[in-house]
Image (cartoon, rainbow, N blue to C red; front, side, top):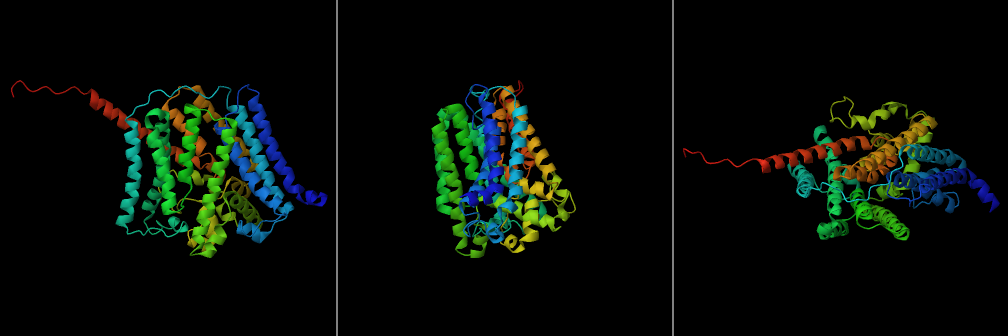
Amino acid sequence: MFNYLYSAFPILLPLTCCIAAEWLFVCRLKREKRPVDFFELGVFYSAVVLLYAIFPAVEYLTGGLSFSVLGEYRLFRADPSPAQLGPIFWYYAGYLACFVFAYGRFRGQKVVAQQPVVGLDRRLVWILGGAYACTYIFFAVLKSMWNLNTPESYGETYLLYDGLPPVLQSMANHMVGVALLLQLLLMAFLMLDYARYKRWIYCWLALDVGGIAIFGVGSRTGLMVLLLSFLITYNRFVKKFSMRTLATVGMVLFVVFMGLGVVRALSSSADNPAFSLMGSGNEFDNLLANAYDLHDLKAAGDTADIFPQFYFADFTRVLPEGVFPSGHIDPSRWYVQNFYPAYADQGGGFAFGVIPECIVGLGWFDVIWRGLLVGWAFGMIHRFYVDGANTLWRYAFYLWATVFSFQTFRVTTFNLVPRAVSMFLIWWFAKTLLGLLQSSAQMPAVSPSANS
């Protein structure tokens, strides 16, 4: 036992620091003499980061300081030692510590608003629902006009639009994000008038789950966005969850998320075993594998072609495709196309992650400033929400930031920037349309001419 603990020490120490940082953060919040809200933006995000650190570490430690062949293939093939993985887990610990420090410093002290949301306009349900339906119409028309075949596997969904002109590819990618935002906004609106719309809400959830049972598992993001939007709004405005219920719900969500990934991998393996072998690892192992792999690739000098352009990758995606001669910079696509081209040709990809960003960048300097910056940004978003009037759009923005916060760690640091632009455009569209409807309703009737 002593020999095992001695060998595992390079993993156990940063893992302990991760848990200690989260524990101190929660203790600080508890000093405010009120229950800790798990669905508060910073609390939720810090728990996500901790999970991304703990899951692969526990898997490695319980596997006898090795990764299983049934897990992430890159990690199994590399068979890293604890000393090789230790520096990466220290990055996890450093990032989490910087985040909770900055978030706790800037979040403010006010309680999250629990009063009902004011200013709900029921016409919004038709505007949001109609816009959501338009996204489906857009993809149906696109597939019909360009004779696009239905993908036979999950990987092929990422190749579906490759043959289209760059402008249409960019529009299709943006429309996927818009559909997710509209889904979140529509669920939030229905939940804020829960007594009126509860039958519609449960029918929608049943249809979404039924669609997976009938058509198979595709992207899990849509279902998770729907469920989290439902649970967070229910907890905040309908009925507060007890800690026991919250723990149970969290465990069920985690099992569902992981289980859908396993089912998807198994379904892909029926026709393409190689694809399943590369993609069989779970979400958490994939990010660790990215970090470990890129650590070696950087040491070999193979990452210089993306530095320092990748710092601006998320900001360039705000602009349409074609503005930049070399196209948009996508670290995930760059990584898989350069180092796993066969996997990329099958539609495979790796999400990338903020720790790989730090490794490709300036190491510890990136870990510190990224953790502090995200903590500051999320702290200011939380303060913005609790300091103002409890309106639909203020709550929707906070809900959006909470639900999609994981993308800041899973994909890239500024991944929410282009999504925020889409959120603003949806808000502007809805406000403008409501204003036109209001003006039309108030327009006086034209009286018949006296000479007619």
